[in-house]
Length: 323
Image 1 (cartoon, rainbow, N blue to C red):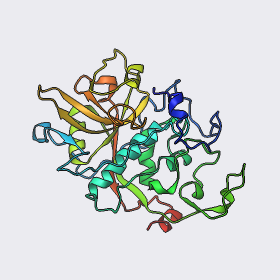
Image 2 (spheres, one colour; image 1 turned 60 degrees about the horizontal axis):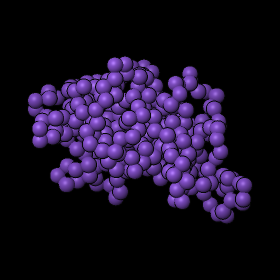
Image 3 (cartoon, rainbow, N blue to C red; image 1 turned 180 degrees about the vertical axis):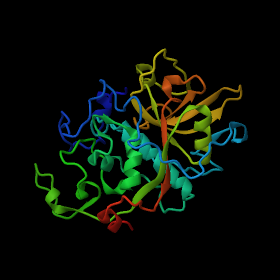
Image 4 (cartoon, helix red, strand yellow; image 1 turned 45 degrees about the vertical axis):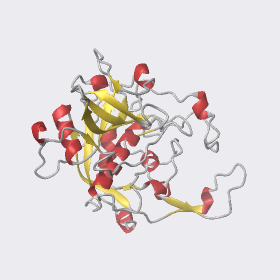
């Protein structure tokens, strides 16, 4: 697992007005994960998958040879890269990989016709304990939350890498604040209030396993959230096509797979996005050899089909706040 360095934490551009360690434990926290893990070993949907109607995986032989959603005919459909460990350490990879992949899918679905690329709010997901906390979690639950409640956009809540003591309060989903600035030692929360905001839903969510399914879903719908075993060697990745075969896989980290490619020699690889900052890897991205299940990347992926339409389970309050 990546450990933010002292140099990264002490960067002059970092916000220092954050909360001290240790992270508070949420009373609803499930069994703690192994040390260094920010993701469960197996993503699990509470009531099983909800697959798209007539969903099938396109045969690999009719798929494009290469897919890279950062550059499709010169257009970049990506939301921006993030660092889950700034302004302080937070094991929120389960929320970062899923919200990044789903935001990308909204950009693809909308054909980049929004005034700005869509980003979805990982901190709101953490505030709602929608699958976990800064102590780790289950990415499948993020899609269930998107189905039942919708996810606020990125402007609703700054990322503070912190566990709140309360869960799923309206003001902790999307807020605005009024003057005056808070006094020294005060949070200023008394001058903040919940605000109407757009919610981003899925109308289906499902598991994706293996090269053929991953390629098909990437080419058809867009990026996936996938689990890997983050190792010390992966932490030190600087660039190139990464390969590390482990005899026993213990998935502990969530990333987003945003495409696949092939070298001139015919070697195929995945294109992934991490949540450890743009100074990691290839500007926050990585390439990983395909077909050898490096770090378990082909074992446990999840995906959702984006929609702006609330589902029947959406609360009246949330429906009222849809713009």
